[in-house]
Length: 594
Image (tube, rainbow, N blue to C red):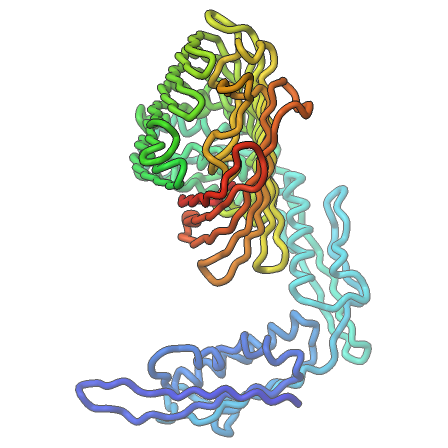
């Protein structure tokens, strides 16, 4: 037998200036060593030791009496179906005590558990199963007879029928017997699939400022189709995806209608109609960046979102000037089809970088198709007008753009991912109206995350970019690529790597590649330390052919988790490459670097 003793000094509080006596409580758990920790964690009596303040004797007796069922449930789930449990309170069995006439104090509670032998599954059937369904491997003969495994197998059988349209599938009967001499648990669970149903009405409940007609358009309720629980999940996702609704919970009716349909009720609640946000970031070279956003989530009463946002960057940095951007975006969900969102964007931007000055205005209409929860595609038509100045002089252009973007997001947490991946690919053909030539701008951004143990995350990011069509001298100057700074290679000067056409003439390149790796180690509940290495390439040709240059940077940082994204502080130094120096760069921001 294994003995584990926990001691707690319960001190009664002061009431009306009079102190009540204090008493010491011992909780002893006696069980095989392999089970002791689990039993203690499940015990309400042992849990009293973690409470602050006074512990009353009535609470001890009530917890001890509740522990019989809790510990038996735990043992059943571990395959022990012949346990003997004794819980004594100062020598008396807890089951025979009355909480009403509890003593003034309790000294010792002893929990003694003799679990017996571990049972295995003998003959287990969960029937009938839906077409194509297979029996759960966890309840096969010889496996440890866990109650949770049998419960999961039953739930999986019911869900299989629900996937086939039998919305009211349930357990029709069951027979479970424990063969103690053989140490086996036999079970026969009979499922009642019930009739195959179709979707009926979608009833709306709740006070929403969004018009009912628009809610139904967004939901895309397929009345009359065969019931499918995935359809309900998809409708909930559509309603929540608007950003206008705080919640949209779908509840099935208790009984089906006589015509074989099943009605569903959607409980709708709204988010606050307006949102304001503010952000800031600092880099010793990049300077201070400040951003602000105003959002109305239901501007016209149909879940349309109007967002106005702006950013000023380069303040106090070594980037040669101040950059700013001001944009307005109007989005309307369920336009033309259920999963299609229409977006109208107007934006004005100025960039004053070491090797490029540009003023750009663009007007763009696009649509976003939500193929699934983690996959979306957008395509559109835009008009872009720019005035640029670089080492080749002033160049102005006007073009039509046809952007197409595909996104795949399978990260476990977009703000602070620890596993999964994110990929975004963009292809933007442009048609010359004035000042340039036809061509295609393409970019790829891929990020992957892997958790190593409980505290270590390895993150890697790859970037590719290309401008094909016009020559490097004729290409839109603000489409060309530079490298260096917090977004590409930390430790290197901002936008410091380009293409040197001749001495004193540096412009952006037509091809770009970047790779970053981070090792993130959690050191506490809130803090993490990070080591990173970045590399970037810029070349004169549309594709990477080795004619360009690479540069690198590396460093370390810390993260403080705020719950809405980590606060980031990175210190980096340059590695190799043209123009590298021995300077140290500091970056402060909100959110992971990628």
